[in-house]
Length: 372
Image 1 (tube, rainbow, N blue to C red):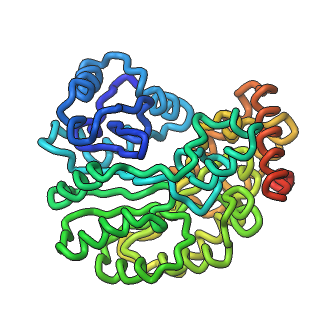
Image 2 (image 1 turned 180 degrees about the horizontal axis):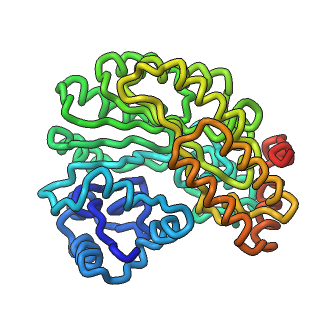
Image 3 (image 1 turned 90 degrees about the vertical axis):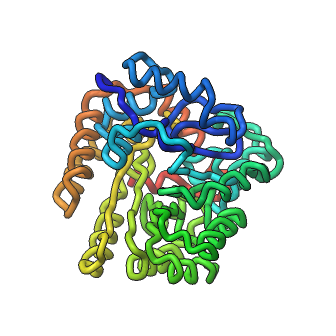
């Protein structure tokens, strides 16, 4: 990044059970409590480094993604917030209030899925593939942190809720109910879901807070969705996709591209185009964005041997002939270039095969269907 300007340390806090960061992509977690972080020397030093264009190791993730794909958290924030000065208090919160989740996605971590955490605790071979495991219980934020969040809700401009799976979390329901009860309609609420909710609470919330923006994470359709994102009940997720498309204020479909689904995206693209074409009168539209996996490294989409790389390039050329946004076309074009230019990493490919084979044994699945 020749220009390292980033507004997020001036407006935003990212919170998860094991700590706090200036954004989700930042590489270091602060141990400070949330009520001390905003005015801490730690955040001041981050701002000074960005302002003076000094190297900042915590920002490596954005640097890497901008180089490979031209997309990053920093660039998205600049587009949304501009070069904003430091605010008196955070006006944008991105909350991962617990790791409670009913899915076990193959590219996820125990810190973001209680199901993966439990699975890894019972399989010692799997533990070496994760950055942290063995919490023996669901991770939650503490009561003081939740109180701080609720206290600043009246001055917030944006609130993102993810997980884990936020529609499963009682703390998220508590926050949403507070917003409803106090008529805090000034907050731009964005919820990222796996689309598995059955609870009438969310149907009611959409009626009382019609401006909620929803992001639904879909990495495939039918049996590919159920394998890549274990826990998926495809008929339920499909039903909720159409529900959100018809009733929500706006909807984003987010697809994470890994070496498991890069060959299988055509049915998903067709589905999303069908959903969009049925809802052409929606005020804020229905967008679809693809993002390549960067962690874990063994799941990156170009971690494929030569024969599968050739097949991936051929499939991507098919995708490019379908109805795609310009930004998605640019991403797929960059992926072709990366597949053609990046050397094959035998170690990471073997690591990927071992990891997915272990999951197959545990879950009674067969990931080889992803390479057909």
